[in-house]
Image (tube, rainbow, N blue to C red; front, side, top):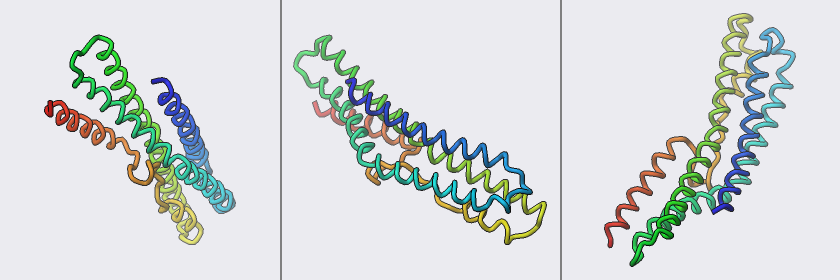
Length: 191
């Protein structure tokens, strides 16, 4: 029970650090003086490109491990349901079933909540870019100088995935627990 949770915790800490980098960039971006934007566009583009490359590397690196951890979480759920089929259900097996179910809940919930923070923070950055564009357009009324901000604002948000099959959004929790509940009912009624 302890090893899947340790892997999930270390993954969540790593993803949280990347989310903190995104939040710091967003904070720095929101403090930029609009008058200095033309002087800083190369620095802004380089910083954002660097962060985006790191997030893409994180996504590529964690894709398969996230999938395996999710599978582990779902298997913990189904292992707890399988105790229902034992001829005699002793307190030991009930305790094991509860521990397996809780481990599954912790794995799926924490991975989903941690991994969904990265795209949320990227959306905050896009919103800040939009605000900078509006402020600059009101001041200078020149489209040539804000072209780079518009390009950064229009970039796609990077979602962490589990083997490019499951995209980590908070809405995934509803689907995950709904499927566990549905299949759990089917398995229980097979008896």
